[in-house]
Image (cartoon, rainbow, N blue to C red):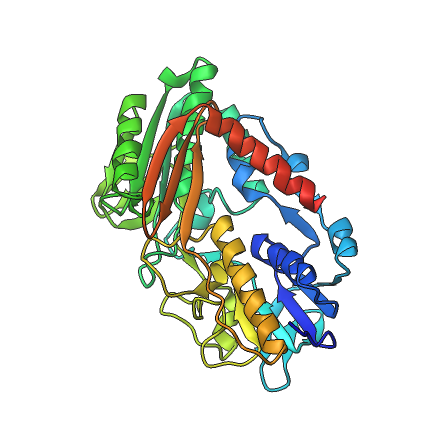
Length: 380
């Protein structure tokens, strides 16, 4: 493929999809200008925040400065927050000035919907960054007894826009930690969700297994009731209010706020509409990968790091074929791969359009640690 290396590519974000896009571009011999726009030149390995409450990981372990990575791949870093997009002049608008582009990849992730009363004051969103993991760790350590409630919900306008897996990991991980500390009997753990079958995207066998594990661990459940809000000491649903001294809640996802003024095609859930190759519908030269996008596919298609990587590879390959003047249709594979970890063991969950597998083993805990180590070594 002959590539015009004079084009300027701008990538929004510095997460999994963005870093995969950078590596793919250089691997495919694109030697033109690549500019990355993000608030900080730091990569946070959020999948491992589940281990912060137990002390297995801390901020230093999971935050990686990207200076070396950007230098290795000859990247221009623009520190700033995206506030808009001018498609006519092909410029990304940020709070630190405008950036011209020839091709644009949106890989800036999603944001959590925080409209429920009391959610900002009285609930911790576990995947809201490393600081959230530290807050859970500190509050848990300060508690001598009480009730801990953990749950998640989706986006009512886009049911697939949720991130429930980490909640199960915090749930089982905190249960395991309290048992190791010899104080599990002083705490009540409650799992809640407006869904009657939480974790259904993992597959029907996974749902039964997850609920069975909760019963085995003595974790109470409050399922199938719409959320109404939070207070300092309770969770309120249409099915009743229950006590909670520490509440972890993962709300549904929606797209970045600036998309509302971008004139890009958006789904009802607030995400950029694209095809299965990452090309943004009705536009030229704009692509999307990861949590910012709304893609065709099965209802269980996850918003997770692995899927963002697959989407970024497809989007970049389509971008390069477009640049070469030989448009092709590279499509990403839809698959869900995760290990639901509980500090001492793990459950491997795999789902594709052809099969679904669930398998529990202590080895998967170590496999998750090994994957983290390999991934971060490639960035450092």
